[in-house]
Length: 187
Image (cartoon, rainbow, N blue to C red; front, side):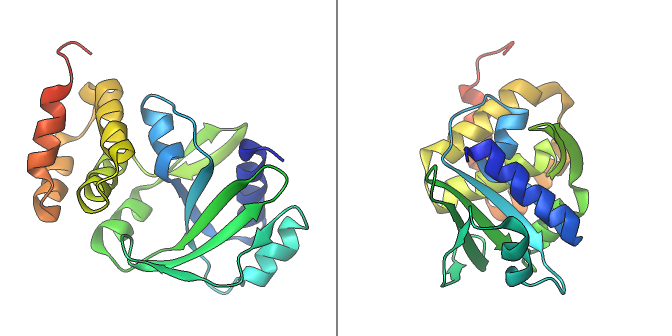
């Protein structure tokens, strides 16, 4: 099972179980920006009364759930890792946190057509806000590149007041301004 098939299987299972979710990380920035290869998918979930056991029953034997959940210090929430042994693809399920921006981006998420399915993802603005925060805290170059690519593709469509308000709150405004200066005019 390849990565896109794994994402579709998990999304179908979440939909069937009535679990609210949004696809985040590199797959959401790929949707709005310049696609890049990835070996994993990140999904924020609000499981409610649905258990991980219910999800695994629906997914079947192609998926393996890591037995130990972890606490992610960047997102400040619980993370569960699903592995697809046949391809090495990984899907990380993050429990929706109480963080103000996490709640807001979840509320603002919307449906898009991806992998032949309707899948919920955050807005382009929320992808930028989140990736800026991750770039500052994780200092991972891919997060910074994703911010640049989403801005380069979506620039005129973006709600800059919204982005600036969160960047100011997160202390990422200087990084945002620096990245924007790196984008050639007219791109």
